[in-house]
Length: 244
Image (cartoon, rainbow, N blue to C red; front, side, top):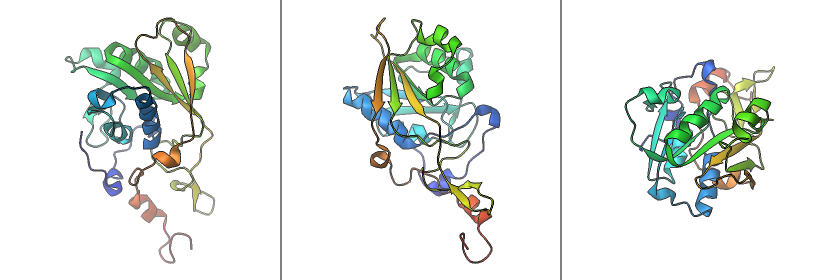
């Protein structure tokens, strides 16, 4: 998989409809999961992965640092992603198999994404979800107390900053969120996230809970976050600079 990693290019986006519940994934959160897998001895560089809700490719690019090949698709055309309605996958011509399916699914259809991924992944499935996804009587009955329960839950010890429709580095000014004076607020979140993982051979054993230690600053890379120059230009005063 190849793509232009320029923040200026990545800022030329096609916004998703609100119904798609698009919250881009910071690349470091994907790297944290891949590092956890690699530490278990998973030969990721020999495997193919599929990111079926790829959005603007932030997770797919990070996966491409670890996996031999990454298939990146979405139901919406954001840029150079492939088009595929993952939840209608069985109506398509057969797709080439992959070992791993890894994504940040839309919250309201996460269970459907899990079921579809488990049918089509040869090796493992990983879903990045809000920690509140672990709650719910219906999910307890249908997923967590059933033979379909995950083999592992990987809880982040630090907050993963995800914001609707844009990717902003935690603690940095967010040009899409302005205060009453028209100046950007710093990006922050009160939402907690975890990875749900399904590995073969886990059988009837209880789900294992692990914590991902703080690692954001270690795993962030230059170029991870779009510059959004058009948005900054829009809010900058005509004279005196942004914070005049």
